[in-house]
Amino acid sequence: MKILGRLSIAGLVLFALMQFLRPGIPAKPATGEVQAPPEVKRILEKDCYSCHSDQRRLSWFDQIVPGYWLVRYDILTAREHLNFSTLGAKPAAAQKAALFEAVNMIQLGAMPLPAFVKLHPEARIAREDLVTLKAYLSPWTPAVSSPESTDAKTRENLAPVSLISVHQEFNGLPLDPDFENWKLISATDRGDNNTFRFVLGNDIAIQAAHSGNISPWPDGTRFAKIAWQQQFDLDGLVHPGKFIQVELMEKDAHRYKSTEGWGWGRWRGLDLKPYGADGRFVNECTGCHQPMRGDDFVYTLPITAAAFNRDEVVNSSAGVLPATLPYQPLSWNPITMYVDRKARTIATLYGNRVAIERIQMSGAAASLGGPKYPTGAVLALVTWEERDDPHWFGGRIPSTPESVEFVQVVAPEQTNRYQRFAGNRFIEERPATSVAARRTRFMLGLTPARLP
Figure (spheres, rainbow, N blue to C red):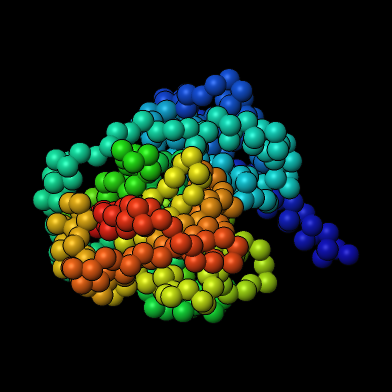
């Protein structure tokens, strides 16, 4: 008993001494507080400011060491990622992007931190408050954009780049110069920042998606996420416009153990400049992808017919096309995409090997009115209904296929062959000759999405 008593006293003394080991949590006035309507500001102040601002708000039990050390670490980490006391000093687009990411973190259950909510239940975001935040962001408000002029396209085409000579990322990840030849994993219509995205995968990624072997993705998997600014055109459709960036993810569970098993990279602009100032840019990537820990940190739902034992892991509804079609375009390379806002559909133009080789041969000239496809080229236009992306508020992805159209280029003296398959059973339609001719011209005239 004496020993137990002495140990208890020693423990109390140690506990008391620990209370003096209390590094500070800086608190200071806001220098660029985020600007938002009162009802939005109230939600942010109530549920987010305790960690994501320069204000110091601690409960009495947060003051007790060693718990204080954990709380301090969480607060300083949270401020580094998102600080509402300084966010207002950033450009409007950066403020909007930060709020969209915050909403996604909330709806996916990553924020507030589950461990934090257990001790601070008042920090849990109420459902009605989340609805208010989403309504404020309003991602599908029509963007102000004018059709891209031929002069603008010409100026953009004057900046080719050698993919082999692109500098590696600050963390040592090189740009894979073959990414433009990879196959489509999925496409995304982003209303939060008015961009389009192709997510391409190398052979390992494509095979894994088709087999459902994506939990986790196998080592050697590589993704390329290519982003373009949305461009509203004279035809009433929204097309890919200015090239923005390409992001790469490379899976190697051992080599990239410290960054969730993935290598991360981002190259911006037609000159493909590495992103960030140093290797710490990776913290942005891993932080953003944390909510998808259960899906191996991958936001994208692959378009595949593979079955999976959980919902919203693959996009199987978009990956089912009948075997009776004359071609299977989902195994081809994508050329471009567009969205019809009125019909709420998303479409991707695919090409067979002959068509893709002509585009690659044409290079920059392919974007000036479309390439001149040779005999043997086949184009396939797959149109899906759009649905909200369950993993990203403000994004839409393909849903049920509506139609598949084919154009087969034949000899110059002959009429190109046009076919359309639609409906629940994808029965071949017999459009009027004038309709077939118009759709053929439309598909052949689609401008390939700009690549560096």
